[in-house]
Amino acid sequence: MLTYELKKAPGVPLYEALYRCIRGDILSGALASGEKLPSKRALAQHLEVSKITVETAYSQLLAEGYICSREKVGYFVEAVERPVRREAPAAPAALPQQTPPMLDLTRSGTEQFPFSVWSRLQREVMLDYGEELLQPLPHQGIPELRRAIARHLSDFRGMDADPENILIGAGTDFLYNLLIQLLGRDKVYAVEEPGYGKIRKIYAAGGVSCIAAPLDDRGVRPDALLDADVLHFSPSHHFPTGLVTPVGRRQELLAWARKKQGWIIEDDYDSEFRFDAHPMPAMQSLDHERVIYMNSFSKTLAPSIRISYMVLPEKLMQQFKQRLGFYSCTVASFEQYTLARFLSRGHFEKHINRMRKFYRTRRNRIVSLLHSCHFASRIQILEQDAGLHFLVKVDTPLSDADLTARLAEAGIRIRAVSDYYHLPAGEDRHLFLVNYSVLDEAALEEALRRLPERL
Image 1: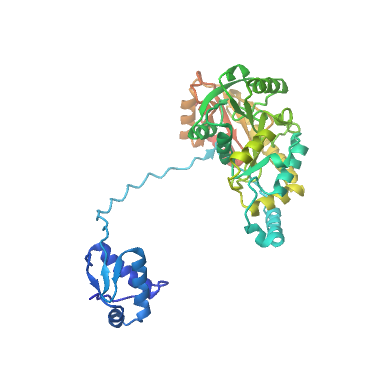
Image 2: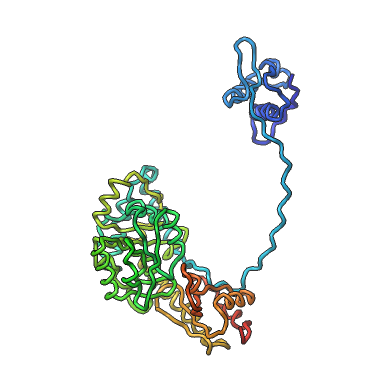
């Protein structure tokens, strides 16, 4: 007979405690296969618990296959595979603690998120929609948000976007994968060289071929696209160089797309922060049939707000509905309704204008600090008056890798433009990125003061 001294753990019902004890004995071999268990009444009397407690524990063991019941005979232990006992692995050696850098010029992010406005709109959405927020969503996203995005694109990017051709998704990574399925895995994708390496990784993981699209001083070279079917690039603000593709080169690339019956994916990420003029019209405004426009609110609002969107040519949207319309929308309705009101009531425009002023002031102060440091004569600041980073050209005999390592030893983390080449970049360009969106100016000043005269 089982001889448990049943002790009730905090928050664990008696039947659960009994079930765990019996299951543990079966798995450990203390109860052998085929062994008969005591009757419910006998075990209840022995443990001084109610018969229903034992009955519930036995029922759970029956349901999971640990025991079986034979009518008018009783309960018996089933044959189950018992886990092999293994010695506990030795605790891994503690990793050495890495000292955080004094100054990290690789970090990017956003500041001054409008919490008060956002939370007020969230409360409104909860009150106005209630249980409707729990209902299934349209596959493309809620109409209110798509209409608000279309108005925003018309006002600020010169686009005549039909809300019916807008598709909402949780981050651009998800949308890239949708495009791979929509355009086909037999296509060859050209991506900027240098460029944001994650894009190439996503396409490679999606099973499509990628080739490099090298840049000159006007953007992607059309003569490099002979073997490509799809071009993914950022004409309004290239990363990492900050280059803006002029209208003449844009027209050349559109001519390539029309002749090749190919597609251009216009990645407009980070285009809102332009300081010297109004943002350039989007390339999609020049051609509605060959250009797929993509953008995200992760950079302009916060990285955790995973709301991105793309504007598809009408032909592609029809194909999407026919072939991929079974996909559910990946952004919660609560966030979509909140963002729709944030856009339609002018809060987004105010936020962008406020942040342009904030970041322009910060950038100017950082540029001033660099111009006044003790090695200012050896650096040249290359600004494109857009985005949240700029480039610094350093006059040094060291290679990019050696200079990066030397700065890391001094507590400064920085990346070179040569790090963003997929193919060998050739000779070192001595160009480095300064991300200033979340840069601590006091830390920069202290780091510059501590840098040795020679690096």
